[in-house]
Amino acid sequence: MTRILMIFILLLQGCSYKWGISKRFLPQGYRQLAIPVFKNDTQETGIEVFLTNALIRQFSLSKVAKVVSNDEAPIVIEGVIEKVKYAYESQVAGGAGTALPQMDEDTFLTTKYRIYVTAQVKLKRRSDNKIIWQGRFTKERGYTSPQIESSIINSANAIYNLSARRKGIAQIAESMMVDIHDRMTESF
Image (cartoon, rainbow, N blue to C red; front, side, top):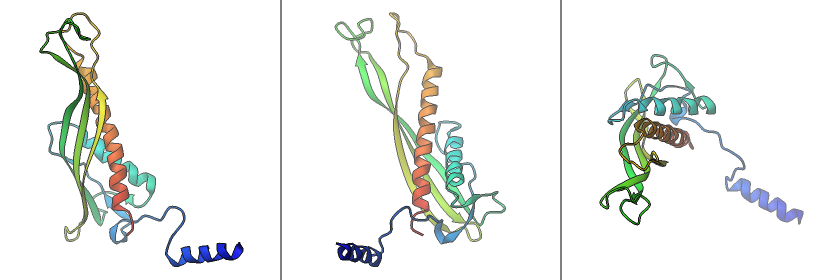
């Protein structure tokens, strides 16, 4: 039995299998980088802060590289938010015999939305502007729209809807930046 165990251990070592979490590095072994505010090519104002801060948090937590000012950094991460899309996920029909009898038959109330965010990220060497890593990422998340509980349906709470959208985008940013960080720092 011990011989079999020894052979198994030797085979694992010979095949380059490793137990545990491997160490992560930036391409070409850089230890400092700058992360300026992402460029926002969408109509959704202010969301660039969510993505930028989420990526800075990832590098601060992982300690793979130190985030420094643009002047000190040999490399820089440039991010562009290319698209934010909202799509309805579920709707409720109005009219007699439905959940919303006070509404016209041709009316639908959207109860859930889906948010899609697409961003492109490039890791550039500052000395010659060479791109040493890049990727495009899309993430999505659902959120519940404002629920109207009145017999007279004439408006919805726009502030709640904006707040729900912002919260969804912030959650997408955290998830997306984990993926970006992990892909950027794997196996270099």
